[in-house]
Image (cartoon, rainbow, N blue to C red):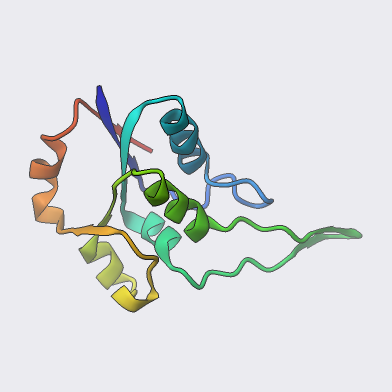
Amino acid sequence: MKALNIIESAYRGTLEEQDDTVVWLTHAMKGAGAELDVLLKGNAVNYAVASQHVPSLVFGERVQSHGPHLADDVAGLIGKGITVHIIQEDLDARGIQAGELIDGLTPVARGDLPSLFEGYDHIWHW
């Protein structure tokens, strides 16, 4: 079984040092032998911007100084052999240039999604 994780809802559960839940789950499932790839779309295309910085979060006296490093997490997926597709039109709509992105992404046009989906047994949209 080969599955494609489509990540569209960005920055869910990432206020502390935790990663995006689906990115973390993809890492874990790949480590257990699953055949997975990822498609970043909508606001989640921001995960691939290399120069992201998350400032500290302060609640009264409590300082959370270890924010998530989502670009590193996505690069880790690529390092594990997971293909990370990214929708070009979503990058364009946000003014994100190719030079701002981590290496190893596979851009895809929105119109090519049906052909992409044919290569997977399951499509999971988050």
